[in-house]
Figure 1 (cartoon, rainbow, N blue to C red):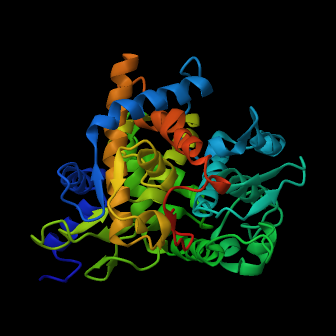
Figure 2 (figure 1 turned 180 degrees about the vertical axis):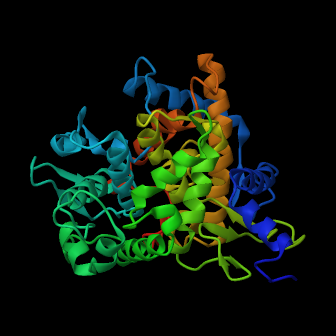
Length: 414
């Protein structure tokens, strides 16, 4: 088997596994097997798709009665009780040029997304300004926003509200723990993994001045994407590709081809062994979450982001939990629901793969019921409306709102 990363054949396989097409095709293969009851850990019951779609529509209409749904992105977690906490930045950001503001927003989005893996049920965060206590995704978002605002990721005291390579690399684990109010009584799952991602982010952008500028900042990716736009338009898949190429080296070593770290890509033995990487299933969950979170800064610069449905839904526990709770997915062993599982274990790879395709199928059902197109109701809006909120709602019957499956998280996947 060829193992030269510079070989055209090897490079083509790597490119394929970084594409949304590969996510859908490989996940689709496992979905079809699940519908035929030929997977070891899950079977799928397609007759439940209508029930799921009706429930998601009900949740969506309760949250957005006029269906004026924003994109699913990190920005939504900065909105609390109808108020955007980004207003805390406005006095300073209003003095910036449109481009510099977009860079700052991208700095915030990237650092916040990399800190966004599941917090666990025990962790909480108290916002000093409002006194409110938050947990889970909202707590992580507000903690990261406040850390950013306090200059935790900047090496330049005169410009605290940014992230740069030196600031990220000099950040200590204790500083991050203090900023997120972590203690023995308030543990945050995967704290060290999150810190390591930020450390690696600082090193990766330092090594790519052509993409992240000088001084190196995550937000300079905005400049790079601007140069790729044609007639004021850029495809969503181009944004994802830039994220995968620019940030690929930050992820912990998992599946590799010819020494190339593939990131959120995992093997599953049910796929046929037909060649290099043929049993690998890509998800790129955090990379796609980051891509969704970069859409609004790009739009504010006047760029139109096209072909939104080329990206996939997010293979994470809220979306996936919804489908278990409503009977679309059936675990075949009771241990799946009672034991913690590593992200790369076959049951979790199956669950995530089925989730990606189920999101597409449910999206089609929802559009048909609402008589809307994929242009007027793209997948990012269905996620926001939507499946993620519905998954949280079905989980609310369990203590702490836990998902039906427990993940042994290291803070770098979910």
